[in-house]
Image 1 (cartoon, rainbow, N blue to C red):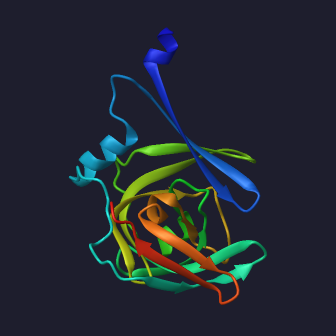
Image 2: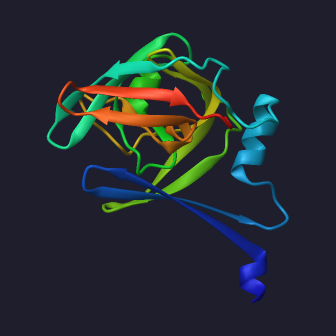
Length: 184
């Protein structure tokens, strides 16, 4: 029981194709959680909610096998190609995109461990504005991974973005429709 009191584990599943990634944040009970440290680092202490726009947003997607790819804007100025991953709890950007876009990572930014089918990786946690079509979330928690690499994909848009919307997927017309949830 002492070990249970001393450590708290948050397991977040992130699915990318057939590989499942679990983000595991372990920390002593008397220390701040990664999210609390991230909020303090950026001076933010409110849950991230979408802008109060009730309009319906339609986003075209490309399909590669069973993977849906969309364009998203990161940090208000950097467009990339991202996997739509409703099994992923967090949004992740790959280090090559972060470096090419010159997105800063504060020196004291917390990190998270991600357990993948191929082993454990680390990701720095930052807060970034994410926009998909006209649907946007300010200061969303984003992991930056140097261990996940792709030549044609810049990251994953996960449920910490999509949970704020009702989402419909029209595979025939390759359109994702997002409508903000009433409680978001």
